[in-house]
Length: 475
Image (cartoon, rainbow, N blue to C red; front, side, top):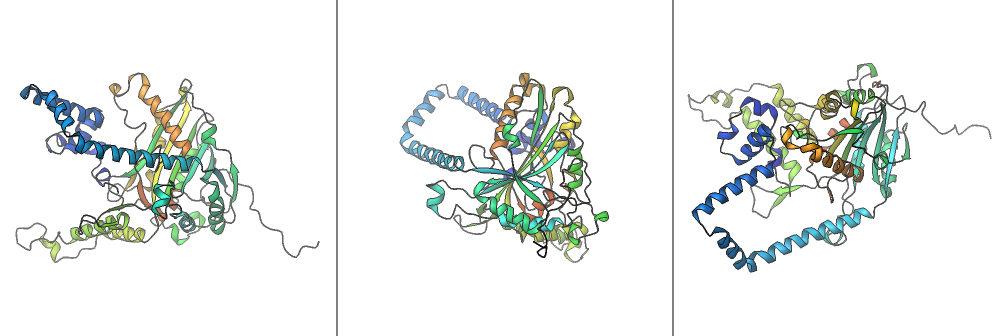
C-alpha cells in the first residue's frame, strides 16, 4: 500500500521563490519542513524534525524536572504491551528482506544489446504493444510463493548508454526471461539484432580522484501519477507520418548523448515491473482496497469535470463561479487532459523507477554536462497542467556548502548510486526507492527503437538488416 502524500504537494523552487514566507505561516508541518527549511535553508527533513523534537523535549523538561526518569519508567512499565508488537513487526520486515534478497541473488541475469538498423519505420505504438509482454505477476501467485519462498515478480531494465558519444540500447532481464524479451522485440521490430553484451555498469570502476559523476533520479512532478507526460500520441507519431515530418521527442535526448566528449559517459536506466499498487477505498469500509492506478485517475477526472461546472456552485448571484453551472465553454486543456487520462487508464500500468548519471574527468566536469542529464526529459514535459520528469534524489539536494563537508556525503551518494545501478535495484532490497506508475504508452515514448528520422551521429546502427535467403535458390 502506497501513501499518496509523497506525490502530491511536492516542493519546487518556483513555489519557494513565489512565496518565501508562505510555508512559514501556513501552519502545515510538511510545508514548513520541506519548503521553508528544506528548500530555503538546505536542511534535511531528519535534521529539521530532530531539532523540533529536542527543542520541545527541552521545554517540557523545564516544566517536568524528572522527565527523563519518568519517561524511562513509563516505557519500561508498558514494555509488555508495545515490545512484543515492535519485535514481531521488526522480525517480519527482516524476514521479508532476507527471503527477497536470497531469491534475487540466485537469479542469473543477462544484458541484451538491441542493435538498430537504419530503416526502422514503425512508430512507438509497436513498442507499446511489445512492452505488454513484460506485464506479468509470475512468481507472486500465492502467499506461500511470496512470503515463504521470497519470490518476486520479474522486473526489467530498459537502458540507453552513451560512451564518449557512442549510443547503445540495452534490455536487462533475468536470463530465464530472455526468450520473452527477444520474442517481443522481434515480433514488432524484426529488423533489429539482439545480442548478449557485457555489463558496462559492472565493469566500470569509478575513481573519485580523477573522475566526477552526477547521479539523479527522475520522478513525476508537480502532480500525482494520474497526470501523464506528453507521449508519442501528442506528437502525432501514432498517425505514422512520413519520416521527414516525424517529430520524435527521443531525438533531442539522443542528440544530447551523441555530443559527449571521449572522456564522458551518460547512462539512463528505466526499471519496470507490473503495477499492483493498491489503496484503501475512501468510500468503503476500512478493510476494502482498490486498484490505485485506475482509482486515482478516476478521481482526477472527476475533479477536472467538477472544475468545469464550478464544483457544484451555488447558483446564488454573488457566487463568482455561478456562470459555470449553466455555461459550457470548450477548453483545450480540460479536453486534452481528460482524453489523455482516459486513454492511459485503459493500458497496462507499470511501476517505474528512472535514474541516470553523467560521468566525466574532473577537469571537464561542468554545469553544462550535469544540467544536460538532470533535465534530459524536458521535451516530454508539460508542467503547466500535466506532468514532467523532474530530477530528484542523489546529487540534486546539495545546494549549500554546509550540506556536505569536504565532499564526504557526495562521494558516499555516488558509491551508493553505482551499487544501486549495477544491481538494477529499485523495488526490492537492498535498494527500495519511490516509484511512479506509468502506462505502456508513456514507456514507449521514452524508450523505443529510433526511426530513420532521428539522425543523431552517435547512434550505433547496423549497416543493413539481415534476412533468410530465398527458398528457391539452387542447391
